[in-house]
Picture (cartoon, rainbow, N blue to C red):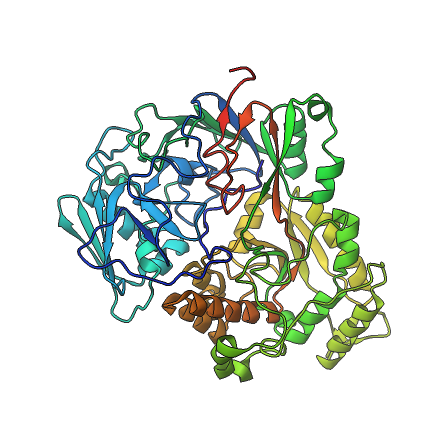
Length: 608
């Protein structure tokens, strides 16, 4: 199946639309809230458009995961959490539709209320909402969860909590969150609807930030079943789930059991799927999709190959350079590293040349920057920072291309010239040096990532022609998590999913706090006032046009910053699965990402 389940999901700007940011008038509780425009579904809708309300219940779905886990608490920085818990055991006040840019519908909350400027937001809990142990979900649980996550939870929660002035009970089932006066951030009203709500009573006497071995009690459709730490976890559907009849949930959560089996590496995961030990596998390599799926189960029709189109941004995927290391602090060096990466040859060798390259952080969407000179609103946003920005940010930046041959001569010459301009020269011993010290760095990779290893093997051979001999270190999942959380690497494999509605999470990805604060997504160590200003402009935007302009400007800062050597993206999601697994004909805007499989899939034997 998947290599990982993403915890930071999505939002966005739907292609072809130009909605206007609107606020819900105060004192008018609504069943849904959108970042901009109006929710697509009316009050009292019967089911999500990409769910089959008649899907049968029952059966099991088994996924394979590379690596291991040692924690049942996915809401803290400590440990490697087991899959599924954050998605299916705990719930939030509002639930997200994966067929809209960024719209939330009532889940634990029956309604949401806010003022036109979204300086506060108030939720009203459903009276029937309860945890799996039968206890009702109360305002006290909400307040405790938000305060605890905001002060002891993972940094992704703490960043948003820093913008909250107070949280208070305003009625028997009402909770209001007021934002600090200086906060001008329209997304916060939605962010506060997406926090997991945990049972306060369960955690009494436990240290939330360090407790990893206690199965959490949630209000979601599944409970934690059998667990063998590091090997497998089973989630069991709760037959008494309080929310099974909500329109938001009709046709969802159909399997009796969701099981995640852990294997040593990605190659073993695929072999386990071929051997019938798991039921679904997501293929990220187009060439492998064409050549590796001719095994007997595919030929007999017992395994089906499904392609799900997606309309989400590419995100960024490739080798990230840690600018905390002085060797990568110079943009000329980073550009030289990009020039030396012969994408066309690597894409042809590894991927059959089938996929397009990631040309910006928001490729495959209207949010992706134009590669020519910045104009109009985008230019106006960037110009105050012109003297701080590397070449290409305002006047236009594109990635180098080669003729696809192994030598990559033109780009290697460009790389050598940039390194020379930065003070690096090849010594008589064939080693690139500056002030007598060799240009050397460590590339840290995760064990079992065969495709990544192959890419790096080709790349390091090319670097030798420049007199650069990097050390490649392959480590297990636990060490990789530990080292990347602490930014203890020079170059590493980086994959950051981005949404159609980027917002507050961008500060966690690119904000200056992440230069020193462990556990952020700012692996590159960038400290860019321009990037932070563009994120603020996105959050302050009152129109779709302003929002897109700010995102284009941020994309330019990131792309021209030359922090990542990008590879390719897939405009379709490729899932192989046993024939008993089915999904609705209508697929969501975000494709086969969390919120689609296994949420709206079901198990059904032929003829049933």
